[in-house]
Image (cartoon, rainbow, N blue to C red; front, top):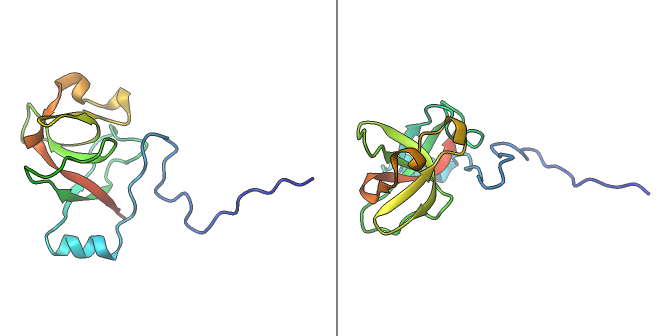
Length: 136
């Protein structure tokens, strides 16, 4: 009796991660790029290894800006924020929990990440936006 494997399609596995709790972001498509050129998305670059394996240093993300009063991103979303004690520093982390006023941020690579475990919860006002796509 032969066991048949599921067939793979061209492109399967691209921009995916083996980390079960860290779904990857899709590659930017035409709609994402249009929103960027219309000013509805911002471009940020990942710095450092704190988001490995989901995001590599140097990858560029399209980010949907967050406005105060909007609903907060879902837990598990990749977000871009200002560091709570160094406001000139922009950080990319995964949202692991939130209240109306504070965000709990974690890096996927806990050994290489400085996150809410170190600096505590981040005020909602520090949230810049939620990552929507990777620019390849």
